[in-house]
Length: 343
View (cartoon, rainbow, N blue to C red):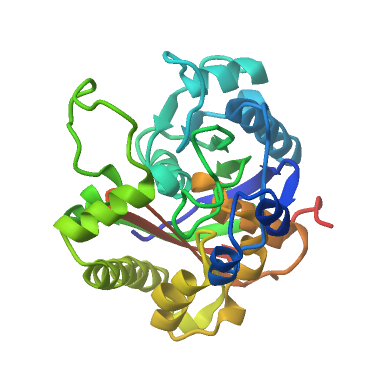
């Protein structure tokens, strides 16, 4: 999809206390072999700070950095992966109430780790379409702290990290112009994350299988891992290729590729080698220190690049994220004007 007159106007990130991989290993939460294989160096841990509270804090930062005031926001889109609150919680309602906002159109997306790029795609439609939105607020927040989750192991090639992100998207000027964005789904891999259990709420008994166990079941009963990796790589590249074509660019034109914060082998093989680009063109060296904050990864990295001036005006960036289903979204943005709030 070719995009015109849509801009990433402001960014706000919240990352709580950092815990090193060395401490996780010393505490018996991870093993040396797993850490070396992944190359990931740590994760942020929020303890008892709720995900939605961090999302509110991120929104406050993004709005304070924005030329749009809260009462000028025309749309709010929240996305998440993990638990957000008690049954009956509606995150956009909580976030807007805490911000002191009036009633505005809202969406609550459950697009997994693809959440914030899916939110951006929805905001593009709202800004360029019949809704006539001039400014949209995107939020996401995650807290994986739970006795039922080992953040260092259960992600399967990802270290689960706590934090939140907010993005203000507008129709006139900003940090980066959105040039193109596309999403697709590979339904043949739908059971990879769901597993093979009952589809009824009360159909399963006992301890639910972990993500790794569901993956192993899929490889044994549905598709070998090698075939799955080949399908994912080919499919993701088709989404990326269309997005580059829509932006009028080649992979060699990209200053930076911003992926989900996963292990080096996955990034190098499935993305960088496939694009014919060196790892030096990727933001993995930063992402490996952050860990995987659900759907927020790509925008946390973009905020870092803009704040630290690691990108320059005119740089083209490719943002890529994936989620259960198997869904993939790719977006190309071009840096327009670095923010005054940079380091």
